[in-house]
Image (cartoon, rainbow, N blue to C red; front, side, top):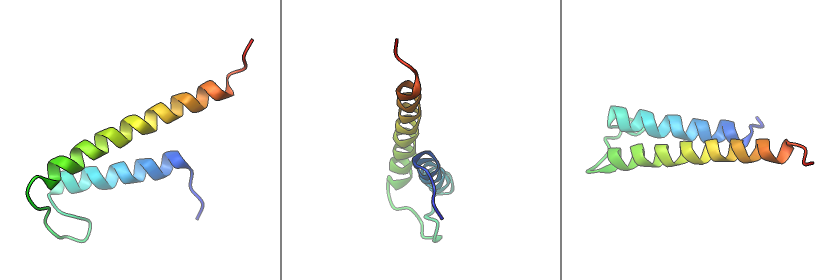
Length: 65
C-alpha cells in the first residue's frame, strides 16, 4: 500500500487522539501517568504540521508571476 504524507499524518493523529480519549494504547494497555495528555498534545502538533504542509504544497503549485 502506498499512501501520501497527509494520509499518514492523519492516521497518526487519529491513533493519538483515540488513545488520549480512551486512556489506552491501541493494544488495550492503559496509558500511564500523563501519557494521555502527551498523546493529545502530540496529536494537536502533528495536525498543525499536517495543515502547514498542505498550505506549503499549495503555494509550491501556485504559478509565480
